[in-house]
Image (tube, rainbow, N blue to C red; front, side, top):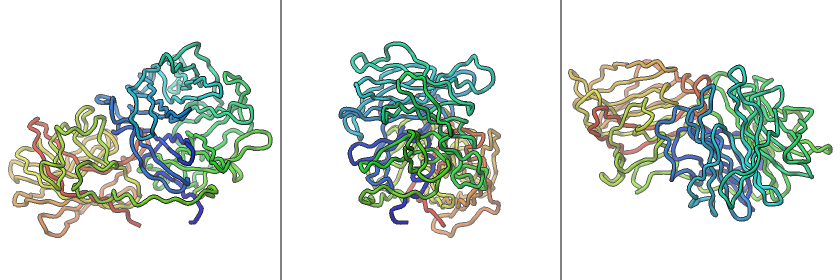
Amino acid sequence: MKNMIQNPILTGFNPDPCIIRVEDDYYIVTSTFEWYPGVPVYHSKDLQHWRLLTHILIDNTNFAGNPDSCSVWAPALSYYDGMFYLVYTDMKRGKYPFKDANQYVITAKQITGPWSEPIFLNSGSFDPSLFHDDDGRKWLLSVCWDYRIEGRNKSNGIIMQEYSVQENRLIGPIYKIFDGTELRKTEAPHIYKQNGYYYLITAEGGTGKTHAVTVARSKSITGPYEVDPQNPMLTSAHNENLILQKAGHASLVCTQTNEWFIAHLCSRPIKGKYSILGRETALQRVKWTDDGWLRLEVSGNEPQLTVKAPQLPVQPFPEDENEYDDFNETTLHKSWNTLRIPANKSWYSLSERPGYLRIRGGQSLHSLTDQHLFARRQQHFNCEVETKIEFEPDSFMQMAGLVLYYNTDNYVYMYLTFDEEKGKCLSMMKCVWGEFEYVNLGISLSETKICKLKVDIHEDNVSFSYASDEGNFITLPEPISIAHLSDEGNGFTGNFVGICVQDLQGTKRHADFDYFMYSPKQ
């Protein structure tokens, strides 16, 4: 629809958006948790069309050993006096009662880098943001996590401390500026200055169905903060029929035409239950009322699927061909991701066999340190994924194939391996909410040199197929539920589709992949 923003603007796993404008350019960063490289930067000129421009955390970071849904939490991007700033949390343990986490700041003169080495800020908190006041002083906001509070929810409001650029450290007292509201679970703070007020925007109500955006304001940056009398400003909590659920965790931007928008997290649960695409990013038009409060431009506080675009020239980007990768380039496409560690030339190569991606076997799909897996976000409810593989295992401990992966406790994997009776064969394994199951397909491929593997994803069910050499695809008889590859009860990411190789003997047996195809379907 012309001159309309279609939500979500960033489909698939893209939670916790932080949006900024630098002159005529708009940038959004989102959380990446255990996926690497960390912190994607999405770029737009008109708020309608977005492209993946780069990633920020590509050097000086390694998240090996971090648990599922830990590592990079809620990065916040800002810009002041010719310099980009990024603050982020490296969560080492996200369960109760403690948050074992370190927070850092890095800087760059260009959004594409190079970025500085991380400067340590503090520990024990999360969801940082950096506010640059008019006088040049900088303030780090984050969640006050208090293990002494009874119950599982130990969020105790928002704290703030000054950051010294000269000393590269936090200085002065820690201020408790906000206790939160009755919605509780107060997190994701951002401060904006407007019409003589400091506006504090937070997420409350948790990251599920009761997620919401709360706005408070104060004449003084240290408070006290007055809560919007119509709080919450944005939520999906009271309408299960909305397409966009879990609305919350928001940030503000003002266009060069003086139009205001709020970027926020949302999800689109399949059958109202399973957020297989993970938490996504949407945009809503907002306005300032005569009495100085922030409201959706439409009435009420529910997120909209379509939103009037700003009065800016429409500037689409050229198509970024990432749905079919023939591995003919010398570098990997920027849409590929690995788990916890950067892709390392010791275990993958695009040059040893030109036109193929060679992957050497690593540890199991349950490993927190050394998985040799490449995957991309699932961005459509209905899609087809296909790859072509050459692999010659000589042990059942060697595997290579096509994987649908949420985390170490939730995946479905069809792979080539070795059986003492059948020789090279096709097998399957899956893990459903932590319960592992080996599925003996009984399909021998001992006379096959090349194998094609395919999965047809239809909402919360999938069908796997295979083809020997140049033969036709044969579909496995039983569809498989992937309801477990969703946020509900699992964590904070979303389903990824990809290819991987394991060699549990440590001999690094390799597989060669000729192509990888991701095809959206109606």
